[in-house]
Length: 113
Length: 118
Image (cartoon, rainbow over all chains, first blue to last red; front, side, top):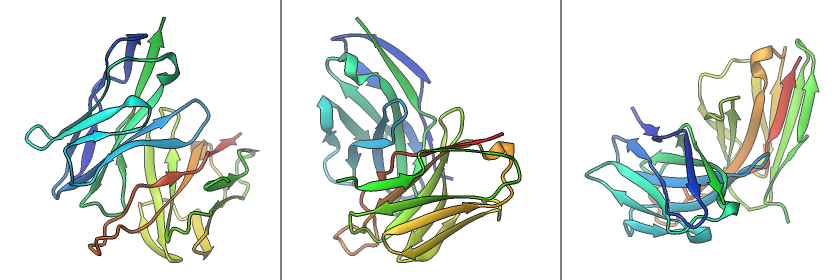
């Protein structure tokens, strides 16, 4: 069965510090992988996606993620956190790249001065 | 221009009532979805329509009935509302990729409809 595990429901960092949000997936077929961000009372916005091309993917707002097949991971990073990065982050897998998205439970990122 | 829009944004109603949520996308996509986000922020797909045809139905109670009058619209009708239906409902849309392999591009989400059943 396909699934997504996001380690850490809450992550807190200082402004300017490294952001690392962890995502591990399970998929019986080559996956497409996505990171979405949700700001309070808003919909989901795509940060970046992996669709079987380059394993290091760059997204919006300075975020990037690396697909590691051997570790079944797709961790999200940003070198320097900004206050505006505070939000809920969701990792999602689309098994085989077909139209079903399976989401992780989300990680709430807090950024403090 | 709003890519995926939903109405209403907030919906407060009594148990047992019937209500509808509307969704429209102007992205030219051929596939639309409904997701439910519960109070713990967990997101789960409910339905998917491709070219007005139901292709995913994730064991949702049959009180929930999606209707797609055309490719740009996917409405969600809920009968006999229950307390457990309180959640945020998101509409999304996507298109097929260009590789001809049946894969899909990323999904674009609407702003959500917060349903509260009293």
